[in-house]
Length: 236
Image 1 (cartoon, rainbow, N blue to C red):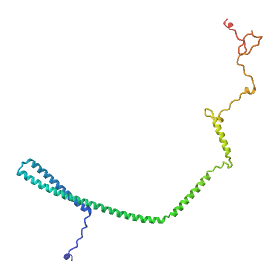
Image 2: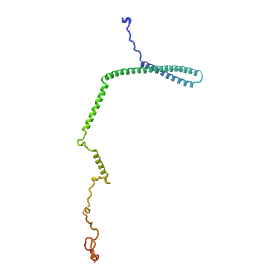
Image 3: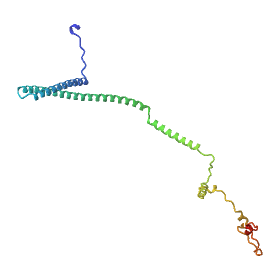
Image 4: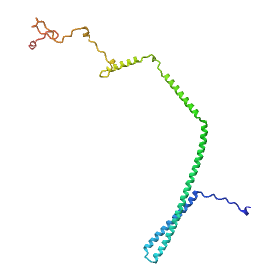
């Protein structure tokens, strides 16, 4: 049967956008190469026209140059057309990639939405509120425990605030009696009492004692009551 009807050939897959774009780019490169070759021939013909004298020879060279120039314009038109096709394919490829990205985004959003709904079933707002209330109550109890443990055992409850204020005023008065060195009055040394003033004793003599009237011509005495030595006897 295969010899009679033959074997069914598999259909080739249709070309993709990238395949079509690559093929057009290859054709554009071939056209660019042809245009470069024609530019080289035109340059050679221009040099020949400059070197030849006006006449039939120069006209023949000009005719050849005109034919090359027409071919160049034709290839340039083809190149522009290929570039436009490539631009259109690029736009289609960009749109196709955008649609694929949108499809993937929608699929990911659907999966995330399904997972989020499943998680929201296990979490309730009322449970969260109750948990917050319990945490606040626990914090209040913890603060009360800390305050209770921080109380001092030696401080009596019947302390009069007026007495405390009086002690504070006295302390400030003592601090105001500090000397120039900055030493408080209660740290300054005690002053020694004046014993002479307390016993009412006469002051000690500081000069020579007064001599009686009958002894005005007596020998002079020094400050200790001894007779002074005359100066003349010392010289002799």
